[in-house]
Length: 166
Image 1 (spheres, helix red, strand yellow):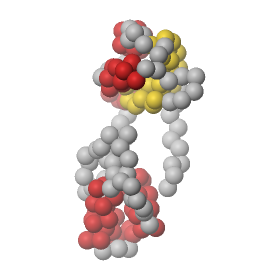
Image 2 (image 1 turned 90 degrees about the vertical axis):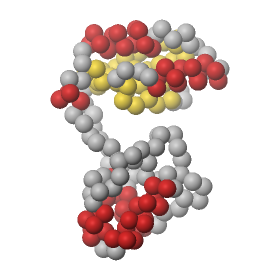
Image 3 (image 1 turned 60 degrees about the horizontal axis):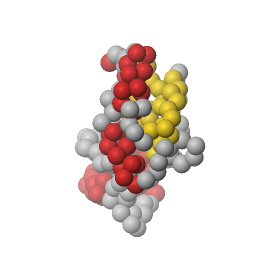
C-alpha cells in the first residue's frame, strides 16, 4: 500500500521535477485509488514492482505526490452543514496577514483555506454540525480578528468533484 503521510499544500516540487508518461500514469492511478498496493499498481501499468516502487518513492521525494487522503462523509460524522466563508482584510500588512494565517490554521471545522486575489482575501471551506455552530464560528473565531473587515458566508448545497488534470 502507498504510505499515507502528507506534506503541506503550499510545498512545491523541487526545481526541475519533470515527469514522464509513466509518472503521469502512476499519478492518474493514485488519484483514482490512493490505497492501491504497489503490486496492483505495477500490474496495472505493466511495469516491474521494483520500478513502480522506485517511481512512486521518487514522486514523493520530489514533492509531486504530497499525500494520500481519505474522502470522508462529513454528514455521517455529524458535520452535515458546509459553508464557504469569504473574508476581506482591512490591511494587507505582512504581519497582519501572518497573524490571520495563524488564526485560520487553528479554526475549528476548517477543511481548507484559500488565500486568494480579488475582492476577497480568503475563502474558508468549513464543516459544522448546525447553523448555530456556523454562526459562532464566524462571530467568535473570524470576525473577532482585528484585521478582518468583512465576512460573507455561503452555504454549500453540493460538492461536485472536477475531472482533475490527469
